Amino acid sequence: MPEEYIQKVQPDTSLRNYIWQYTFVDFPFEQARQMEFTVLPSSNTRMILFLGEPSLYEEKNTWQPVDRYSLTGFVSRPHQFTPTSTLRQAMVHFTAWGMQPLVDFPLAEITDQRADLNYILNCDLENLSADLSQAPTAPEKARILDHFFIKQLQQVRPTDARAQPLVQYILRTKGALRLEDLCKNLFIGERTAQRLVHNAVGVNFKFFPGSSGSNTFDV
Picture 1 (spheres, one colour):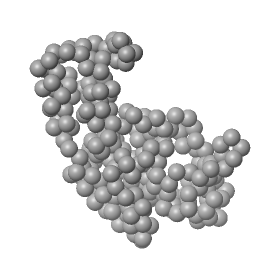
Picture 2 (cartoon, one colour; picture 1 turned 60 degrees about the vertical axis):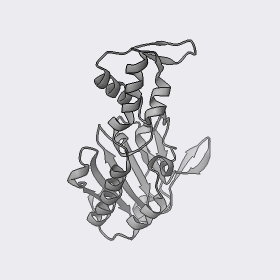
Picture 3 (cartoon, rainbow, N blue to C red; picture 1 turned 30 degrees about the vertical axis):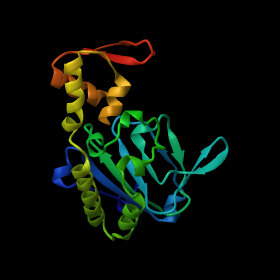
Picture 4 (cartoon, rainbow, N blue to C red; picture 1 turned 120 degrees about the vertical axis):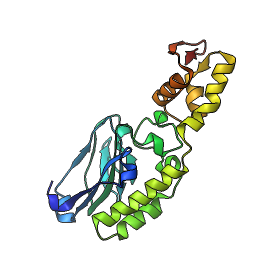
């Protein structure tokens, strides 16, 4: 891609455990209309905000608008779209540790990129997009995203604080607990729950099908 249309900016130092970099894309229509893009499944999550008119993708021989806000790390299959106007995007590249510490939401429940980011982030992405659209330079856009994610980080309850009541329950009852209930109560993903509770309780968990068909923790 022509470098003059793509700018990359590092996040604030306080966010670098969670965010690797920001990428800002601004293709004039003359260039954008000649291009097709494919979003591939990936291990690390990216959040894409369309700042202009959403592009289109083809599905079952019909054209559908691309979601204005999406998480590409949860795409289950290659997803191709064709720009239909000036292509303006802000992309947030999360680290392997990633997005989970920034949200009070179990990301393990997301199955594709059509997650409702307004709900996950508990915010108004329309206002964020409007602010990004009005910022004239990439560094100014980056500072807007820094402010947004620093505020997100301050609002999210510490993971240990979310885990503490459940850890106490496990220690007190010494009983089995369904993995899905554990994650639901903690508002975290399955791997995070396993790691946290294992560290706090100090035992290894064995997984086996429960009577309901769901996995349980045996402690």
